[in-house]
Length: 356
Image 1: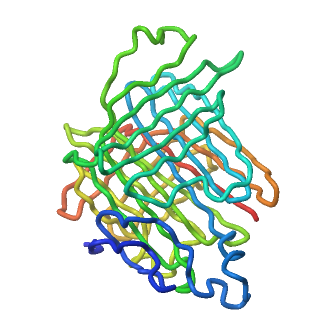
Image 2: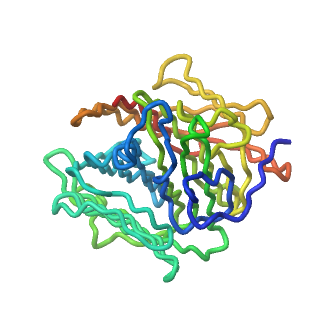
């Protein structure tokens, strides 16, 4: 059976200009990949210019009460972008709110011990924060609606020391040994509530806190001119077990994906590393998806229920993406040989095409 050993993480991904490639259980103090010696070996660029090729992404995917959703930040240094997308799992209805920020030194932080990432605009207050000293992970948002969308508020809190919390960091060649990607993934239980003001049966005075699950992921990489990425996240409870899985494929993946990838299954905080995954949607992006590997650990079908599609052009960057809510059916296998059977299991797939 496929397996990858997870070792103790380094202090930071880059040491003396060299990436600390590896698969790690836990997290370094910093998730910063600048400082690599000659990342573009054929193009002698000053380090300050080479840093502009680094792009960062932070996502907080949650499932609580009747809602599943994603809060995301994208940081290109030239501009920033944040989005809140919420689906009602009973009705499959979608709400989406987004905001742009101008040029800045850094939007997404590099510290993994304590930091915040936030949009403070009055109509789009969105904040993801964590602090290991106080054992806290949080998502707060207060976004104003319009004639079609209600105001949306959320407050979700998790703990680093909970028994079902798990952290994993992957530092991988991207795709050459000269450049690297760094990905930090944390899964945990959450407590809180989502409130939609002005919609039927969602009077905030009658909303009560509930328990749910979340997956927090931060990613940094030296981007190419064209990049395509598919991110798959599932989270829910099966037979009282808390199940999360995260699968990512990209044109920036390492050449040896069996040695370096970010794919993993989490069962009550226990990590099973997964092999390279093959993802297809032969009948179209809004039709059934097939998600499989060659080691018989992943055999899933994904049925889309609602698509949040968007095209964005900003300065020198253009991107198009689909964020799709749907359900998984099939089998996942842990490294202990336990079979996890998914039936109408909720999750989100995001497929992004980025052009610089």
